[in-house]
Every structure is written in structure tokens, then in C-alpha cells.
Length: 216
Image (cartoon, rainbow, N blue to C red; front, top):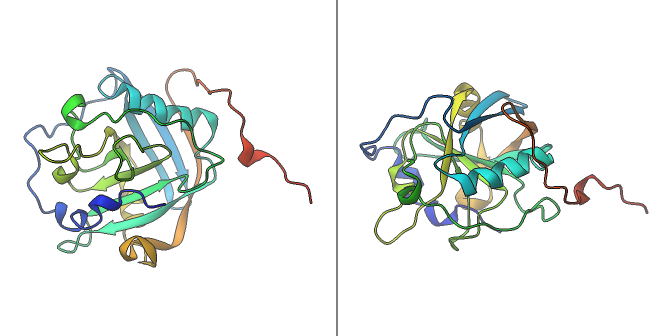
């Protein structure tokens, strides 16, 4: 299963495109919920915008609160051909069906008013608009081509990095090869845990088959 495959080609040049007029990321507060990623490359804290992207945020926080991101990886680095320090990194459950939650509607940037700026977190998906789930990407440099535009609904931006961009830069710089146009990390970066820092966790209560021990 391939995620974010439809922008694999233009993502390599998107970092050099002009940013949209609305470039200011919202400050902490006003519906923002912070989540801390602990990775093998260092910590990253993101702010999830529950006010502007409520459906996408609810999906992401359900994965966090259930522990569905604990023990997964950042597995992809898509670097710009024009500027190797720009692009995006992708992580999540990949194709682990044991961790996946039900699908949800696509909230486009035209609906939310959010944009793919430097340090934006957004949902990865297949070609189908409603196929996002347990995989996400973080941009390094503005990537306005991922926003909704005529002929494409784009991708669902739902928050931004508030600390830890050096960690994202290190992941982006790691050696790649293999599938996804040669963008798979040769040594995926461990996402040890994802923990909500604000508000009360709201786990789904669904079973967690990836935690169940198998018996031979």
C-alpha cells in the first residue's frame, strides 16, 4: 500500500514554490493540543489544531490516546531535487492493519484555512480522498502544492511542529532507497511513543491486537 504516492513527483520541487499568503502558524492555545513524539533521533512536539481541523485532529488524537503510534516508525524521506534540505518526512502505522482505525472524511485546506507551511503536520493518504488513517507527514519548508487547488483536494493539514524541527531535519537527511520512488529510509527511525500533553486522553476502547501475544 502506497501513501502520499500522488504527490511523490511534485513534492520534490514543491519546496521551491512560493508560500501562500497566510503564512502565520497559530500560537499555542485556542483549540491546540500538544503531542510529544519520542523518537530514536530525538523529541518532537506538535500542536494539533482541533478547532480548525476537528475531524482530522480527532482521528490523530485517537491514535495517540490508544497508543497506536507507539513502536512504529518514520519510514520515508522525500527530499526536494532543487534543495536537499527541504521536503517532507512520513511516519505512522504504514500497512499494519492491526492498528488501523475506521476512515474519516477528508478536511481540505480550503475547508480548514490551514496551509502546508514549514513544520506542518498533515495526513498521508492514497489517491482516494477519504483514505487517510494512521500515516502522517511533516513538511520541511513550505509546500503549497499540497494545499487544495483546482483539480485536486490536496491533503489534510491539521497542526504544526512547536519544537524539535532539528530532529525532523535529521530524519530528512537520512539515506534512502527502495520503494516509494527511492524515498524509503534504509534505516527507519523508531517512533518510541506519542503522548498527549494537553487535556484528558480519550482512548477509543477498541481492542489492541498488536499488543496481543501469539502462541505457537
